[in-house]
Image 1: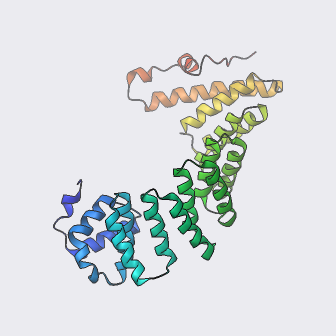
Image 2: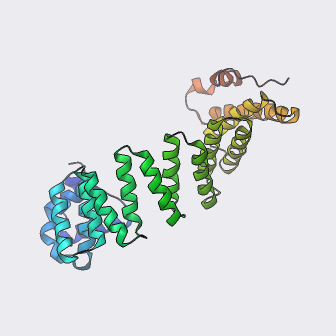
Image 3: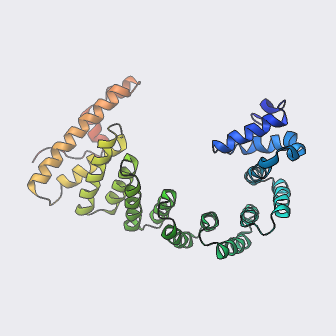
Length: 296
């Protein structure tokens, strides 16, 4: 087992401190957790005092990650005896059922938890994970919509909902999710870039112009965002060949030429390969499919 041999001579207190560090740093280290639990900490768990329950939970998650179901069951049983009826323990029971692919039974347990505590976010997230595992994106979307009504500030939930809408081809709804994310973090160049990509995919002059705006903001926030530069170039070419006003078409043509120059400079400054250092504007034009950026 990789890295496990480094911990073979550790005392129980050193293992306890290591487990604590991994929890604080939000590191799973599942293989190592199971190895250290079996070789050192299991027989010394009575010495853990107030940390014992946290360690048991840490071991349960690691055991489920490694498909060591028996270890997870033993730890869950210990917690169940000490905390009968605990919703937190019920969540681990549902996770065990998930690991065994008993999804319907896991959903029953999670629904029972939610019925007792509607504000408990963890079981709602587990339900969404189960629906995704079963390939039921529509049900996952429905649950996520209900979840975001209760937990509107959960950025991960909005991001996941955006991904699900994208997978279903619901681009307008995916754009709405990214707009919600921008409200929470307006200085994220990646959020601006993602929203621009969705708008560009939706097509139509209005969406292309919106995409151009978001790509521009992404480049403004991070001038090294090459993907946003490429996207901005494509938007400019779409606008220059559209039925937009003459001034907008001319401005788009000028901006497209400027972007090509910046992309060339970026390659020349950062690339280590001499063949890449020879990139020229005509070569970049070919990379974009010989798009015409010349003034009319």
